[in-house]
Image 1 (cartoon, rainbow, N blue to C red):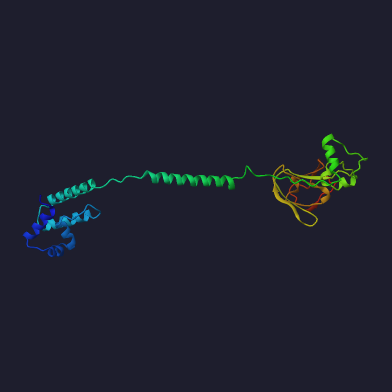
Image 2: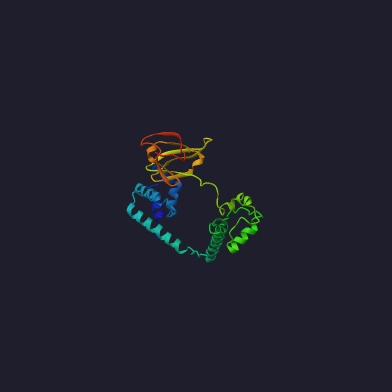
Length: 262
């Protein structure tokens, strides 16, 4: 059966034209013309350009271009199908899939173990309580109190002065001194306030909210500075003594005393 390439070659020779003549006239490279005449055109990314060259070549030779193009497409498609028939099917190797899955599983297990052993230790956190050491002179008294609910008396062998000097024993001995006077500042409305000690160190400096309170020992003699004295209610040992000043008053370095009333 005659091919497209043979039709082109016969048509060119009938006009006494060489391949160089066709290349110069159509501005097509000689290699493409040779491939067309030898039916050496593959169905690849250049197929569209080769069909265009074939159309120009056929028109120049005054051939039946539509029939030639149709035959060319059928021949290329036929050759492509033959190539597909000869392709050896690729058999997937399941071993490599299993190997990849196994490696991924090992990595996941290692990562998970590392996370729980070294990172996620919130549940294993140990909290330590700082307990002051008990003097040797107090150990028998503490042990006896824990066992028999023993109450200390003035006839104990332990000196009362030793107990007073120990911070852990202070809570269990009645203090003979007067109770500490506590001043409480309660905000009736949001108010900025600042408290400083005798060395001018800032103890408190903030905008306090309504009903927010701050308490301190009156003997500390804190200096009070506030933007609105009328919003600050004073309580001494829980007794209401009045406001520090009138509404809108600005106070600076004001000191509260035990007998304050307003």
